[in-house]
Length: 193
Length: 160
Image 1 (spheres, rainbow over the protein chains, first blue to last red):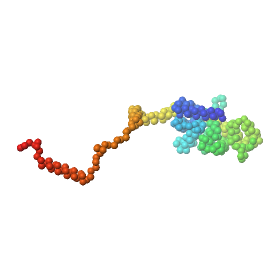
Image 2 (image 1 turned 135 degrees about the vertical axis):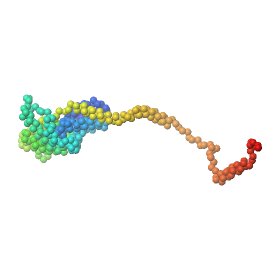
Image 3 (image 1 turned 90 degrees about the vertical axis):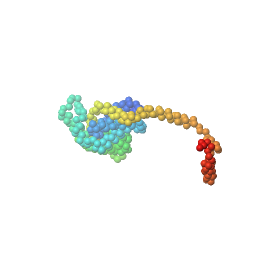
Image 4 (image 1 turned 180 degrees about the horizontal axis):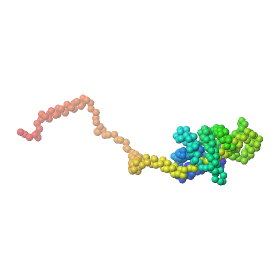
């Protein structure tokens, strides 16, 4: 917990310096949180170009809000609240192409993962891509809030309390939400065992 | 420990177990429970499979120019206000010092000026009010004098 407190203080302190006009502190925050935010958004909307566009908006809003920033919550809670809000809006208003349309199109965007020390065969690569495709489809079928909660829990390793603050729910509601989400994923991905 | 799957239990403990988030003591307790509880054991196994599957999902590479685009947008955002205010800058640059100096002078004047009590006008300067009959009488006197002047020959006039 000491580490968390230190992180809270450091990020919030940097943001307070940004508030005072220190551009270098903004660059540090961007460097630190750029990838987690883009990856979270990518897994939410499942389109790299859209994810980057949304991430730009996230950091632009952070910069614009510097004047009124008050460290009332953990910096990452505030950051992911902005990111989640933008992701949910983009999914709901249909501003971008529908998620399903991209599931096949941008599969080539993802880097091919090495399955072993040797170069994977064509067959192995195809199997790996098919497996990834199933995972992405399984996540895509989750309701938006469940999806956001799973991604924050799994990839950002957030505590239940922090996910609850980001999604504006109670901690018990988040536990219930996650339990249902993982139940769906267990059923959909059971054959991968 | 109580079975996490039973009523009143904490199923999130099984999620944390599968995610490797339990501390050593809690993990050891859970291991002992899983050894005797088939439902929890199956649940934990399935959850670990999901966790591992999600592990394989790596995001794509981020564009090299992400930061450059962001800073360009920030610059544009900042410049918006500057662009809006630019035509007014020369006006402000020259008029603000003048206005400030004028303001200081006005304030100083207000602070230093102590107007004396206004003295009442001397009685002689006051216009006395006249009654209508007095006015009428004065006009008649003036008319009479005028007629009188016409009757009296002017001594300075050239003689014929």
